[in-house]
Amino acid sequence: MRLRVLGCSGGIGGRHLRTTSFLVDGDVLLDAGTGAGDLSLAELSLVDHIFNWEIWPDFSQIPTPQSPFMRYEEIELGRTVSLAGRAFTPLPAIHTVPAVGFLLDSGRGSLVFTGDTGPNDALWAIVNRLDNLRYLIIETAFANKERHLAELSKHLCPSMLAEELVKFERDAEIYVTHLKPGETELTMQEIEESSGRIQPRMLQNNQIFEF
Image 1 (cartoon, one colour):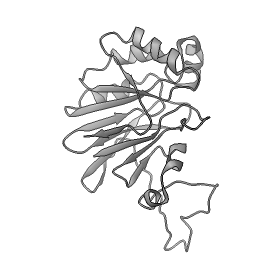
Image 2 (cartoon, one colour; image 1 turned 45 degrees about the horizontal axis):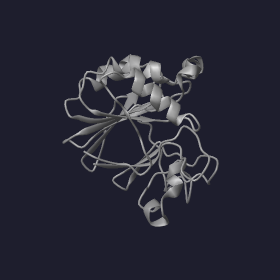
Image 3 (cartoon, helix red, strand yellow; image 1 turned 90 degrees about the horizontal axis):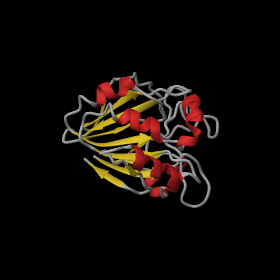
Image 4 (spheres, one colour; image 1 turned 180 degrees about the vertical axis):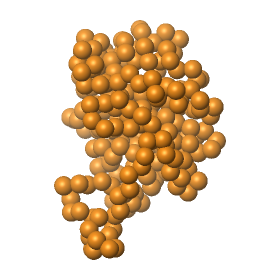
């Protein structure tokens, strides 16, 4: 599997900041945030399912309800969906609104994306069972000075991230996403100071993961 980071910021502003969006193998979008807008028309034409809601016409009813362009299917938490030999599994997230993370498994290797979440024991119970885990992408939305806000909004800050990573029992590359604009350097410095032997790296736009 090949995952391309289209966006990984906790906010927008300027030419380089895009909210979370991951393109998998050119035909699946995960967490289709503003980064999806940077795809070319040719690339967008390869992605079948873009959830537009009220902004665009309801393509689940067009051209007819009996034969629409788009069908919605709710995926139960923990239920694996197989697409062309690739496995996608929604993982538990703890957030102020219903949210999930994702496990992507090619058979040869796997990647976990936590989604927006606060402290999450249920996630680690699953992650620690993955023998083929290659990459972990985990959010950290606030600097330590805003820990109270992180707790209220059910996000992480560097000190909370360190507390979560103590629960991590696998050996995988760790990347931090959802950093707030204007606090990126401070937050990454605090992560470096508090993470001990585990040194997460900052996720970057257009970064590629193959597994």
